Image (cartoon, rainbow, N blue to C red; front, side, top):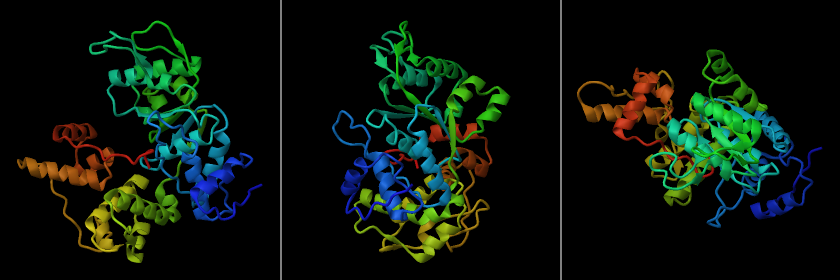
Length: 382
């Protein structure tokens, strides 16, 4: 049976009410969207462990307005109570880390560490050391022993983002950790007991990867205790206005703009019509760029600079001609690649397709030109 929480005057009042509740999932399809957002903000951040600095980490606020997301987060509340591994599925940018944080915050491990790592961002040797730790002298530069992420998360949760990118040798070691709940550092002899819950996420078809021999079947079964699929933003358009308003407020605060610009009805209409191949991450980038391009009290369609897959304009202006990433003009090539990466919310696969080059070539150019991925918001990816 769902319950209503009548008009909390602040987040602090809501926290008091929720701490005194019976522990059932507080979000409900019967509650107004604004109250669901407030409750999920508490659930995602209110129980997070305070780091050694003494400051509570900022955690992304989930927006739950569509029927699909309400049902999904109700399931999150049930799954969170156990220790079974969870596999989060969905397109890039849908908010898998935000959901992982919500799982951790709703679990008995909420007061313990939540440690995320991207399996695609580090080379094999570095990832092995980051995950499992190393002993002094185990490799060149290892002047002292270092515990790995899994060991540091003892009692809490490890979030393995982009788990489909794991190297086969790392897959073998991770499988053993999952099966034995013990971890052995690189160069170490003695295994160490751990108590860790694993949440993994991917936008790949891991079942297909198993058939192709790229991903271990036994590891897939271990990680896929419960799978939760997050729908793309185009299937939950009712959340676009709320997300856009949230990003407006966050970006304005970061830039010291007060009051935050408001979305005009025309701009909101453009946002609602876009198909969002980059999902919530793309929406955040678009809103942040619009705030930097605008100077008035409201955001207009021309500030959004949105384009469809066919490069047709959505912002009401004329179509923009993309510069070509070839020829002898090195600055022109650099500008062209950066522009397409920005338009694609740094989705390398999509950007490579639009640029007419392989993803590996694009990655090489990104490294060559020193492009840095936009910093993710504090508390997690959208």
